[in-house]
Image 1 (tube, one colour):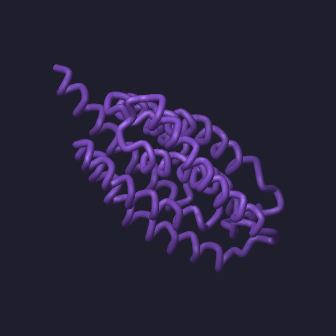
Image 2 (cartoon, rainbow, N blue to C red):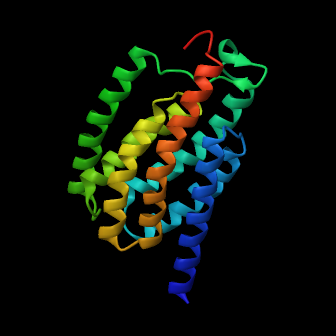
Length: 199
């Protein structure tokens, strides 16, 4: 019975995760409520696999999906057009700040989980967590480079989930690799067609 529940949760995570990213590629604001479902389910799945950094990540996703939902509907007034919030490049100062956050955060979180918990693969798990913090914030702000960061994260996640035997999520992140590529292309076309007044 426990096995069936675990598989059902993984399949729900697989379906809602794919739908969430497909909607993000299409720049559809419904990506955020679907993302809420995905994040809640994933909290349960990764907690059962002792991927504690991923638990924190998906709690954060719940909050960032709410923020992204708000920002895409009401925020970024300087980037708004008749079709909605424009795609933009991440400002240079923010790129450097995000890069520093990823490096420092990965080392700090990895050291904590390595020494204080029974976490499995603490440093790669921490990298995907901290990098996803940054990528999710960038997606919520509709920054184009978020797709590049998602691609890198997806590669690491595929390996992590295969090692942990969570095959449905490994498959999910393999598909995310392809979707990240198409997301980049789609958003890049949109940005060329509707350049933001301020990036």
